[in-house]
Amino acid sequence: MNPILSNLRNITLTYAIWLMIGCLLAALLVLTNISLWANALLFAVPSTLVFGSISASAYYVARSLPMKKRSFFVVAGVFGGTALIYGIIWGILCFFWNKITLLFDESWAGIEMNQHLASLLLICGTLLYLLSILVYDVLLALDNIRQAERREAASEMLARDAELQVLRTQINPHFLFNSLNSISALTTIDAAGARDMTIELAQFFRQTLALSEQQKIALSDEIALCNHFLTIEKIRFGKKLQVQMRIDPDSENCLLPPMLLQPLLENAIKHGIRDLVDGGTIELSSKVRAPWLFVAIDNPVDTQPSSAQGTGTGLKNLQARLRSLYGDKSRVEWRIAEQVFRIEITLPLERS
Image (cartoon, rainbow, N blue to C red; front, side, top):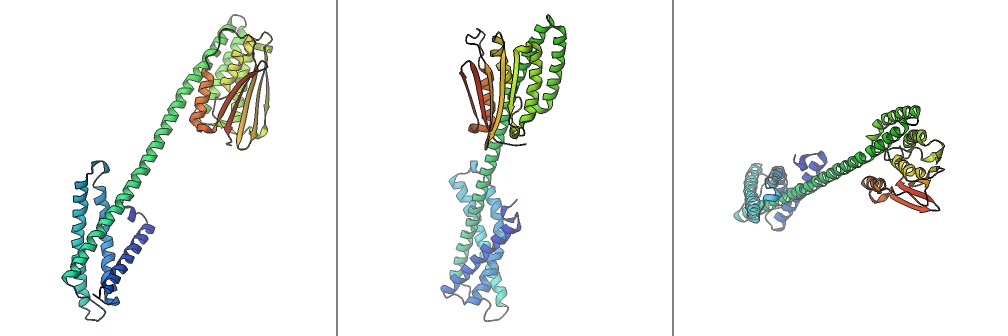
């Protein structure tokens, strides 16, 4: 649709501009001693407003030549030829309008039409229509830029969603395989424990089905999932696995990606608690310091870890997920000090 005719505000502004052009043309007629003010205004203003309505067709002329198919000679021929045609049309329009005003037989109506004035009207009409084409051409170019930006934003969103989906497919099987291995190990030494773990595992996946499709969930929901996972692991490790949580109540409704903490707790057990003869305590803490949410996990590690070292896939996935969601506004740091592995996550503060 013609952008000038898209709403009342644009229509009003357009006709206000053409009214000013009509007044300028009347002033030109007066300054060149062709006409008096009354005659010049009666001649110039109505004819200019009518030509303003006709010039709306310049939108379709500008749109008829896509940017990719343009050349200098094509643009000059189409734009220049069309502008000349409409300049002639305006000259004819002005001639007949002047004839009508002369029928009033009044001193304030009609002007003397001569060859010099006809040439002036032809030139003005051609230039005004050419200017209209250029204005519409700029508007079309800006609209194309906005559409390209929207397409780029949509493509980035699709790419981000695809990346997140790939990361999820890496995380979920990783947890499932480890859980099944734990159940397999329990079947020979504790059949009842294996049965309880199977039930807990089924309930865990049932709860994650609804939340896993969400981009972000409340920290309280993530903690609930982690508690369910830890219940599964405690069946396997017994008193060897202890958990301590220090969750700031103000942080419970803060948002974060689903299944963000569970893989970290899994790593804490696999690469920390499992290698310790007496086990240990995993500490999960959170706090809010506007505009940031801080979450940390601490777990003891063996001074002489086993040869089955991790590849860092979980931490790499974590960094990739946060980078996809938050860009450079998130931070993940980890370190080992005094036989304690600590990972700290900083996220922009968002609340449900």
